[in-house]
Length: 187
Image (cartoon, rainbow, N blue to C red; front, side, top):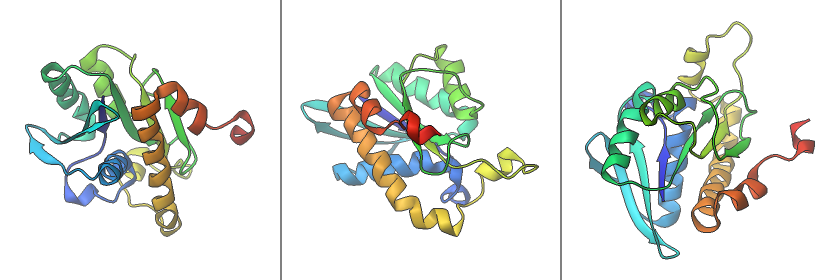
């Protein structure tokens, strides 16, 4: 299985909300004790887990062009895959796994859907909160986390790593049952 973390490659975006997908894949790599290497238009790390090859990928094109690198990778190495990205419609730190769906206004997901010509792929969305009314969404996602969010970020990344690892070992349905919010939590 391949896990794609979405983000922007330039250093100035490293600690921004839009890069939480990169951060989550970095945390999974750390848990698996593997390192990334540079391969055309992406960073890639690989290991074997529970008898299956696991590949972690961080596309090195900007978020809005993620689908190009993902399609190229999947053309070279067809595989089941999971996409991890930010979601500004979810409260900060909330995780939501889905087997398929629309882009929900996320430009990275829109690029993947466009280039793969399907909405039928699983994704793990990590909540980054919504901007205050009147705030530009594009500007908001490219800003660093607030100090309060930075304090909570290690726990959020741990739970995202746990969710990703559960997908890798036990499958998407088990991970959805374990990590998606309950109806009570959605209230």
